[in-house]
Image 1 (cartoon, protein in one colour):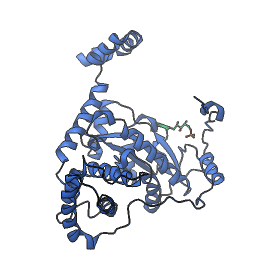
Image 2 (tube, rainbow, N blue to C red):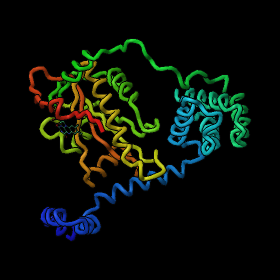
Image 3 (cartoon, protein in one colour):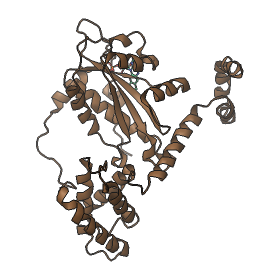
Image 4 (cartoon, rainbow, N blue to C red):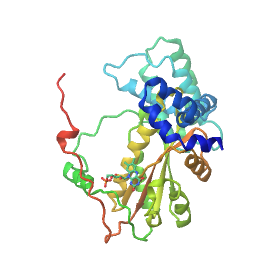
Length: 346
Ligand SMILES: Cc1cc2nc3c(=O)[nH]c(=O)nc-3n(C[C@H](O)[C@H](O)[C@H](O)COP(=O)(O)O)c2cc1C
């Protein structure tokens, strides 16, 4: 009853308070809207999980970030004889914990070679370091190497950039970008999982802040599952029965120790999603991004359907399939170059 009363005048209340000063807006969000408090709860649950995972061998987000920082240190010009003092201990201990035990998820991943190579290169590069932390951790890493070395590759750390002719030229890339349009009408031809995986490989090569990779793609491609997922967001109305497959981009807030980084799931997740779109397009598969509205009931429905944790948030969805050649796609003309680009001299 109370929620009905609040909901009914919500739009008027929303209009009035949001058009008033900052205090009125504060009142609105404090007493009449839980929109930000749900985000707050998810961010808080993420930080709690990050802290809880720390040192447990499950802290792969911390490891990726720390290994990334060491690798960046290795690429600096000039390279310092000693660096990474504040986090080398935590990094080596996390690597040791994450790589120990039967069935360790780190040892089952290809990332392990990168992490091992970077640590190896780091201890070689800091051989003249007089910092006691670096010295003592070198012994720990050497002992670990005796055990892990035979199973791991070296040479997977920093390397020189590719300066040869790129495999895709600007003409081809521009053609691909101009060819892509949001497709909402698909044939009933199924898209093979091999095609999906190849597209995902492109998306997963995208940059992420500190290489944390705080997202994953949940894919549904059987009609019953697609129907269930497609029914939740509002943006599939009218064409949802046409969709061959759907990717839900899910962000993981347990990648961060501080709320200052809470936007990164959206930034990183969407960069990856764009790679995914082009990965599909390059294989002749049409896509349409689907908005994920921040509505409590929808969030709960998707969380329950996909089994999401409190620290995981949906970022967006992507519908994909073979485009129906007889249907229309909107042209959706783009802004002129001059409207999106300003060269500045400051
Ligand atoms: C984040 C995002 C959310 C979108 N949400 C929807 C949606 O819910 N439903 C839909 O039909 N299209 C959706 N679209 C597709 C846009 O309408 C489309 O990208 C835009 O009109 C430009 O057209 P184009 O993709 O063909 O260039 C979305 C696109 C983006 C990037």
